Amino acid sequence: MSRNPRINITLNPSDLEMMEILCKKKQMSMSSLAKKMIESWLEDYEDMLLAKRAEEAEKRWIEGGCQTVSHEELCQELGIESNIHKMQQEISKNSQKTFKRGSSVQSRKGSPLSRKKLANH
Image (tube, rainbow, N blue to C red; front, side, top):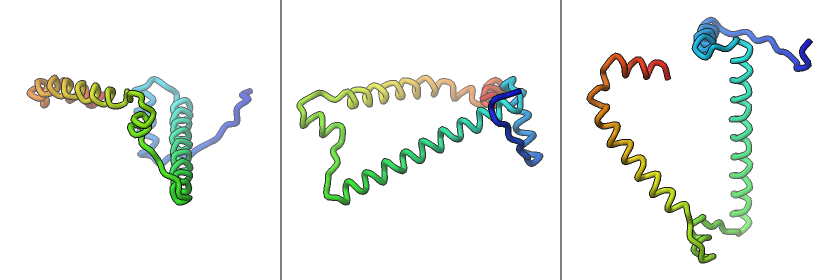
């Protein structure tokens, strides 16, 4: 007997069909996939609630007459070097490389192989 509580759910036919397709693709049981989906949704929901609480706290902070300072401003004020600017430059440089590589692939965009790859992702 399982120690974890169980639930029963009713799905409409189109959702059930989608779940069956995903189960086959991921080689998972229906209950395992449903559990993963619920856990993922709960994590996302918790993140959203925490972000909302942070926004409300920031709003109260600012309404109370306090000021916020950006990361760059703080580093400049403390006389330390910010790695964020370097990271942004590196990301920008890498995305330009990816774009250049991707442009050569665009000529193969309509090939059956590309469509097959897109369908599997």
